[in-house]
Image (cartoon, rainbow, N blue to C red; front, side):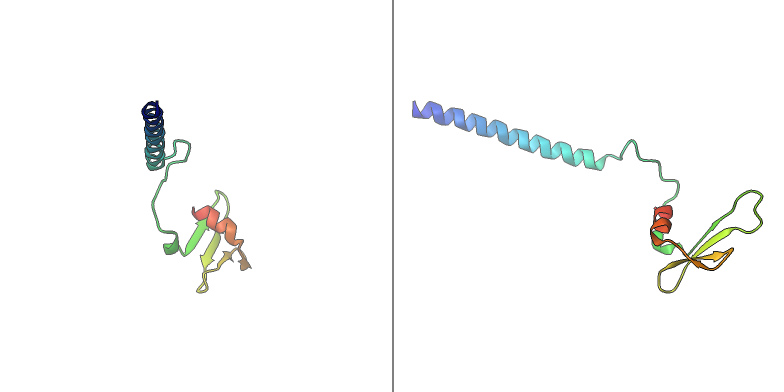
Length: 94
């Protein structure tokens, strides 16, 4: 009777172990796949290498220009010299 209970416990433990292993492998495969809802990347440029952004609109003479200063902070340099919202610029770059 004890051997039968031990065998049942071993089978249940093996089944649960297999379930945990399968679940972990499924999560790894899921992480490796690209997100289907994510927009496609147009270009792949390191954010640190970008030092200037210009936005031009049709019919507008002067573009809006944003530059990264020596201190790493972004500033609007055209049409006026103003501080830029750092989070908005980071969002634009990502």
